[in-house]
Length: 399
Length: 220
Image (cartoon, rainbow over all chains, first blue to last red; front, side):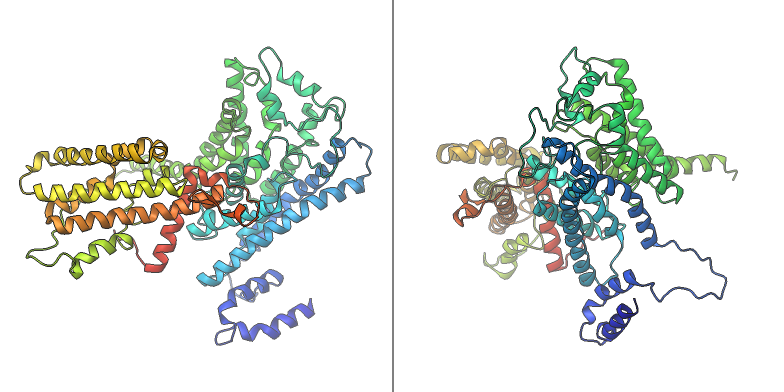
């Protein structure tokens, strides 16, 4: 630590005003304040309110909340790999090794490209580097399939940061969630690499006989009339991965899927951390789940196709609903800001997710599009909440 | 839709290519561009730019229609009763559009099929109507011709830029010539660029670049 501090102090003068690297001051400042506490903190005298929370701390809390999902995802990628190639008895270390081998490069590319662009923009626009990308850079790998080509991760990250964020003015100014912008970009630009049977990493090995890369959503969507989706899910994977889509396993998350989204359990652990530390809004998380559940119940009542008759609680554990509800919908920048607006925002995300899942065969998973759509509508929701509040107060006023 | 008050450019006779009149051609290319500054004609800019060839044909078609209807309306401008001017303008534009449509059908049939409904929709293109209302109704035929050509070229310029990136990134080709394959590289087409959303993104980037170069800002 001491050595780092000394090195930083040694080069500091050339970045300050008048120094020869003055232009790059903000790049230097970003590294300095990332490694050490900034020297602009208050001293112990005086009567200001002191709190440890700033943007950096807030972002680190979100990252800590994502760690369970990441670790589980790394294990699961390896686990699914060995199941698919017919070696269910592989050792824990081997599974984690394969998982790390697939996941870490994605994380590195996402952070490398994203932070590179952030640094360039902060130097061009002469503002300090914001911490917003720390969370985005971790969210992007978690919503990618495990065998996504790395160049696609790079291109998607660059697109999301430039078009989704910097074009609108940088951290805190973006209209739509940056990580989901990256995923949506890949979804429309290279659909064959992010849909179909890409959810299990096979590598060079041959898949075991009877292996199918289908996800629960695909199974549900393909169920023909007269067939129960639950029965189809329960019998899925017989021969190579018995019981992979039972309700219990769907909840725990040992199934194919995007790296971080599979485990509802780990998402709930993350939700717990976010709610306890006051970082994420519990109203949004609860209302997304509630909206999806209510919509699925309504579809159950109407009936008609096997997917519509899928028990409502299944909708909460398949696909990426839990991950989206906990980490994407609660993004404080793009969500609704008013307290009652958050309920409307969350419920509509849940409702739309189930609608897209069940009725749109082109998009097997709806949570991404639902959140992006509601991101766009969030300011409108806030507008109506605020003007309703004004109206109420004017009526109450006695002038 | 821009239904601006007719801006009167000249009072006394002056040469066709005077400095002021040359501006009629050069302004729409940059600081008064119909797409990136006036934000007109967006729908056709999104629809016909997946490849460069239809974009080029569309740009030429629109330039011809704008310039020639500008001239005709400018000749008639003092005899058109103002209450029915829109319908007169529409009749003139429609005549030209049908002529262009038939020509395209006769000589470049495959491109005409690709452009499909969008040639006919030039009739309702805001740029054409906008120039008639804002310029031809108040100016002599000469400057009106230049104004029409200028705006058509401004529209065409953006169309070609957008078409260039969409065809290059989406299909790895320029005017149907497979660039990356010719260089011996494998290129995976970017599907987003073939969707209208991709065109929106590129138009946005063009506006971003243009405004950071010329410093144009919206005034309210």
